Length: 143
Ligand SMILES: [Zn+2]
Image 1 (tube, protein in one colour):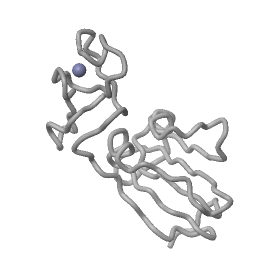
Image 2: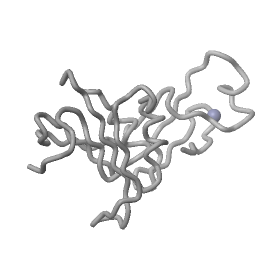
Image 3: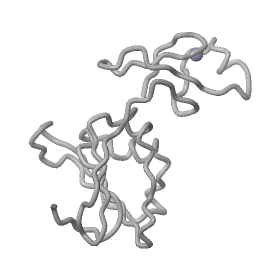
């Protein structure tokens, strides 16, 4: 097991280069209020360059990362759970079939844009291309 620079927390590795801040925003992790380290554009054996997010979590309960959301923004990422300076568990993101209130429809004529209080719902239409479309108007989602 590899030794890391944090004692307890999580390491999100293999984040696409340059996207760490976007990933944090989607995961609703506030960089101003969280003990974390970002390593951006570092060398990756698999993808050329990558970002790494390390989140310290002193009480050991673990900051929870929504693997569905992570799958949407960083399909290639891996999540390592760190306890006592070692990665004790690894998780991989999932690609959800259906997402609610994470993506926003960009179609100005969509009912979710013109009316208030309607949930933003998208469904997976192509898993390889990672394509999501709006449940209401079929507009493709853009991350
Ligand atoms: Zn729509």
